[in-house]
Length: 86
Image (cartoon, rainbow, N blue to C red; front, side, top):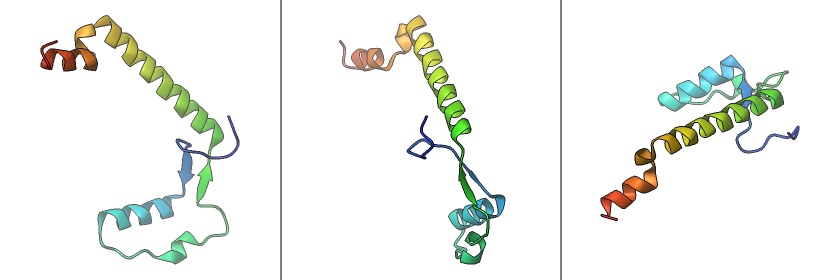
């Protein structure tokens, strides 16, 4: 896995920044830029955690595929065909 972040990468966000962003998202509270200015980074890319999360996601997809194959009536394309009378 690359050391550079890309879509689906996992990041750690400092609690003060997270709380401020959450408050901004859930209320009309104005953004306070002094919270975002810090000597240490408030948003950190985590390569190992990203890799672990992507592996877990792949495993979950495989589990769902296996269950879908065990119960073909639950497959989406079969339900669509059934609705159309196919």
